[in-house]
Length: 115
Image (cartoon, rainbow, N blue to C red; front, side, top):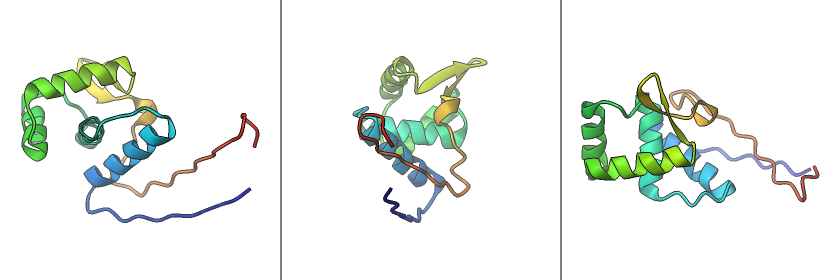
């Protein structure tokens, strides 16, 4: 087995979350767009994407519109990356991390499921 260690420093939790979801997309061939990755990252850091003020903040931060948010949320819900929980739109708990803390990833790339 080959072990390679990489370390990255990020300016904030949003950038760290964006990198995580970019890696998740690449490894699983999800073909997420940059804006979809940004929405996932923003949602996980903020906790949800349900309130108007949060959506407005996303639009200002990423120079986009409310209809764009709705379209992305719909797509990510179909992919089960975003879920509606207690009336709130959140990142699926299976891929939701606390990006204010250090994150260590272990990625195994297998051949035909063999280690």
